[in-house]
Length: 337
Ligand code: WQD
Image 1 (cartoon, protein in one colour):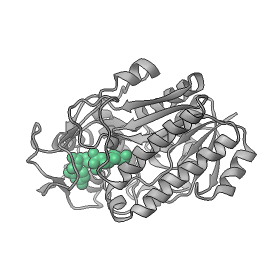
Image 2: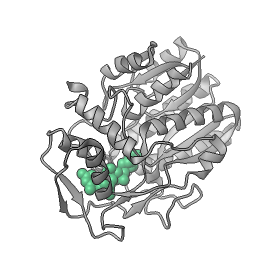
Image 3: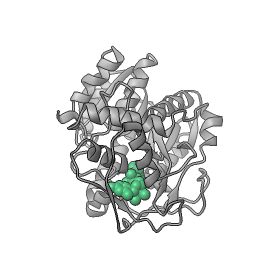
């Protein structure tokens, strides 16, 4: 019996596959490589010392998806594949709704047809919109401020309705906060195509000399130093949260949402300072205007995941910065190199 990981060649997906292989699972990956590279799969295998099976498949290609399920005995699915840039989603809503919504509907319908009902879904803290209070708990109101977030919100509802139609489905909705860091080997990590949207890859590209300086989006928020505060979580802790959720859906049934964060917020300047300390490299920055759509502060209450999944984040900000830097310094051009 195998675990299917969609988007398994991506940043989160690669780290999930490493943890699954280390735990003894058989892993099958499908990925369309729109935001990843086949090279990642080779590196996953080198880290794990085990093979994994991978297919270049787009979830919108139903016959190709069916063929993978025909070829392998899949017992559960960890669904990470999806477009995930907030800014890009505003510019390309049709692509985001089609890729993320239709792709997930096809995946779930193929699962339904084969009686496969155990599902771990990559959701996002973005479903909380502008949080009315922090730390954020799973029962707080949900809203979306952009098409990307709307796809996550809609898919959480789709999955609740699928369970409503068949209560044997067992679904975990994992609401990620801000994943950063990399595997300790430094051989897999975050490698966004083009100009990084997110803070840490931008910092590491400045540190390695690919970019001149970091632009800090506003220092007039009501926060410790005026810059945005976020809940950064080590990607390996996040990956281990997926294994805990997989074990949970194998035992339970129903639909449950879980925050995967650390419960600790850091400002932009605090992260820059932590990175400079961990890497020994200075990161020049310039304060510029706020980025539209940003919230001042956002961090998790992850006690529900701790109680129900027996999971909590263990790595601190120094680990995250050191591991991000090891990845980027060993791979100055990401996987391109
Ligand atoms: C973090 C902080 C920025 C870049 C996004 C998505 C969310 C999720 C995680 C998918 C903010 C500041 C950033 C830069 C900066 N993705 N910043 N200069 O916006 O919290 O969340 O990624 O699920 O859906 O919204 O993360 O890393 O973009 O920003 O000052 O060049 O860093 O203003 O305060 P964000 P981020």
